Amino acid sequence: MQNSRTLKPWQLKLHEVIYEADTPAGKRFDVILLIFILASILVVMLESITHIDAVYGNLLNTAEWIFTILFSIEYIARIISVRKPWRYILSFYGIIDFLSTVPLYLTAFITGSHTLITFRALRLLRVFRILKLGRFIGESNNFITALKASRAKIAVFLSFVIILCVVLGTLMYLIEGDAQSGFTSIPRAVYWAIVTLTTVGYGDIAPVTAFGQAIAALIMILGYGIIAIPTGIVTSEMSKTKDKIVSVNTQSCSNCNTDNHSDGSNYCYKCGYNLHHD
Image (cartoon, rainbow, N blue to C red; front, side):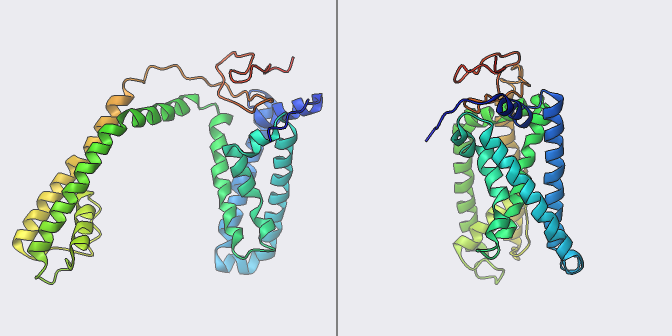
């Protein structure tokens, strides 16, 4: 399945333009691509407005077909500019690129598939590579690392919150169950406890007895403290990784399609392929 092939000079040049943002041509390509993505998303949004679609429907449909054809060409170009096409096709961006391109073609066979075009919004994630926002990518990686390191503590905390909601919901059912206030069952009362404890407060259920209102007030106050606890846990873990050095290298290996190489790298850290095609 991982079919490998030798790339010609024009394919290597195409790979450099499409997959990397370190060169002027590569950056221009990606900026133009982002503009097209934003424009195509705008077209889909305008098509969903009835009175605009009634007047400009044909124009918007034509524009959408133009964008789809351009994105199809780009998708094919990405496939032919790597030595192992399936690495790209089955990658995160490869799947997103496919899902954002194919819906308009499917409209000829499946009704309603046109709305899947909004998957193109996910392609805007490429902006992190284009603008070299390595610092923010690094912070997101640190956040994920902190979440993983905190998962045991957070799991224990969430278990406690769930138990607390069940206990408080049951208590409110016992107090308000006969007061015609909406607490018609324990599950419904538990739902109210969750909504109140998280400070969302839809207002569809509310206690009417003095005792129930007093307990509700305590739950509301308790909710502020509960929201702060997981934040403190994750923040503590993030402080342990804040001094890590973040790479802003945008080079992508044309052999295995791996990116996130260290600054100044000459060879792919995964397959050892020459990143500069020398």
